[in-house]
Length: 154
Ligand code: DQA
Image (cartoon, rainbow, N blue to C red; front, side):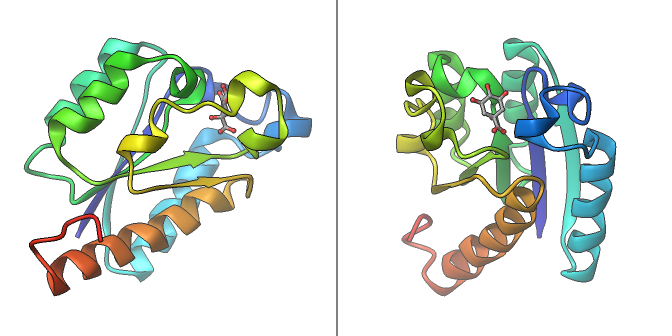
């Protein structure tokens, strides 16, 4: 099983950026934690971060034929990007939306996610653990798919 972890704008600043909201762990530390958890679960993972919408869309397109599930933290693009949402729909890979912070407990504009309606589900508010929960959710999604291939998002 293969999982792509896609991080959007400003997530490269984890550890420095608003640590009271996003914590002190850097992106590479977080990726290392996910890599270790994935290893113990027998999951292959790849990571990609970009501050550019088009790069994220290209990487999502490239994941076709490789990734079984994508964990997507679109950062601010979550709330604004029709193109990223179209890419999620277009690639047809199950995507799980991830946020470190609880986007529903912050500014009103963060409560709207353009991704949410086209993803399997959303994990929000658990800090770096959101990604580990996302990994477990990804395993669940693939198991469900194998049980019932006609219903990939059940
Ligand atoms: C975020 C939440 C977004 O609203 C914000 O723009 C981010 C990070 C999170 O992980 O909590 O960049 O996606």
